[in-house]
Length: 258
Ligand SMILES: NC(=O)c1ccc[n+]([C@@H]2O[C@H](COP(=O)([O-])OP(=O)(O)OC[C@H]3O[C@@H](n4cnc5c(N)ncnc54)[C@H](O)[C@@H]3O)[C@@H](O)[C@H]2O)c1
Image (cartoon, rainbow, N blue to C red; front, side):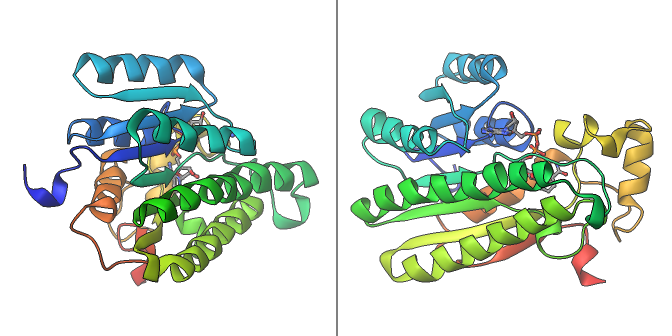
């Protein structure tokens, strides 16, 4: 295997791994030799994924993890240390969408859930991941933000605010830890048709309509395939990618070039 894509023996923690980007990333990294610590609030699909990966020879721990609960974030790191003796890579991927509302209509409840899951979920995760990585003297963290974290996201104000916060957290942690051999980046995908999109109000008029509407403003004229986002994640996590840190990388079919 090309060493840029070789994750053999690396311990990789992924939150929100039961479906969507997280599940696909787990499959791709398992195929490249990683040991995995997977967490999600959806127990059944998470355990089914773990079973499939183990049957293919991967070493996998899968446990219930609500990222909004600090003890669950810590338990993921503890599991990596107990089972594999180290944590090399953490992907804080778990996230939730919000109801489509104009800014003045966004409820406190929506803001609070965005804050608890999409912001504190990343902070709780990093709090424990960074401690483990500092002990080891190296590490890589990738936080999943969004194009909504880089600019406006009409009718998604709370989600946009939360994803902007993820970038602030990522950049700050990157600068604090750059000299300690720990890289921290954020990835900012444009729309991809994972359940986050297909099962949300964005797809109220059907998935085909959503595809057409969501891709209208993208120079590439289509939404991303989930694997296109996951491939970019792998490039950011690559063992050969040692000088990129503190970045919020758009994977957006040209949207941010306009
Ligand atoms: N799909 C897109 O178009 C898109 C675009 C930009 C950013 N993102 C971001 O990518 C990440 C992954 O999203 P996805 O598209 O794969 O969505 P998805 O809904 O398919 O997967 C998200 C996973 O996170 C899990 N999750 C939700 N709340 C959780 C919690 N409190 N604790 C633990 N797990 C939890 C869900 O159960 C699910 O398995 C999210 O952070 C999302 O905001 C997605």
